[in-house]
Image 1 (cartoon, rainbow, N blue to C red):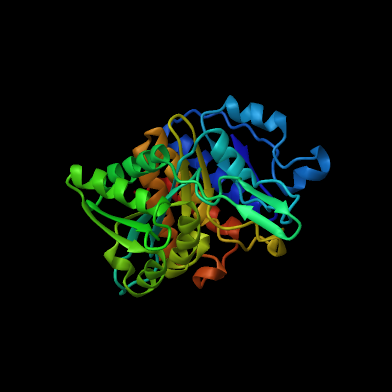
Image 2: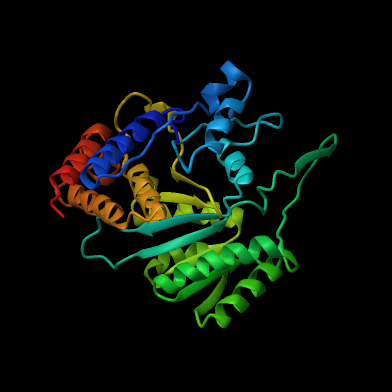
Length: 332
């Protein structure tokens, strides 16, 4: 299932789909691609950013590649499409890998932020109680904490066996205290090296010593903010992908927004969306395909085929075309 999105969303999504076509031809993977309508542009046509027809298509698909979408602001506006899909399919783990792809000579940065995706400040419990008084309820549960904690610990076992729990338990003593204690306890039982950090301290350590981290697990709002900061540390939001993982369903999307001012200009970096496709193939169990996407992306960067945000001069379509051709030629 594909939801192209708003603004520059359709451009980066089409760029990523050209890579999907190249991969499927190269590896003989059969895939039915169905397109749906969702996002800000949908509201005028259907009265909602996620029409029932699109929900039905999502329910009959295995996973979704979602382009960036514009989320309206205002007290009477709808919940974002991403949050709606996360909640509907219980996509509890938002996985955001951060690597410095192009900084030769610098310290190697390669960590993953695992963000709890269904609770916290994004639980949807945000309302007016009286004129001039609004309340947003932050929800942390044992169930939600255990399942995202297990995902992060499983990932740690595959990587460097080092887990960092990010929280604010010194102030949010009950909710974050529970979050921290549960995950640290789970990690110790699994013989994972685990430490923890307050979110405000973590915001500085990610800038000063990003190479020291492997897997970072945190709650919803903290993960949202830290992952954008981390993206700028490794080269910008244009290169950071994400996977929203549930028990039986998944959504893949770049972490950046729809950037409407660049719509139709063919200048936005497609690498975050292409690497999100790489994560999709990993989720499908197609490891060779995923590795080939990664190789082709790195090849394009080494050859200087990159967009302006990475110091290059190529258009979005030129980058995706090079990556697709590299995959088809099978240089890896």
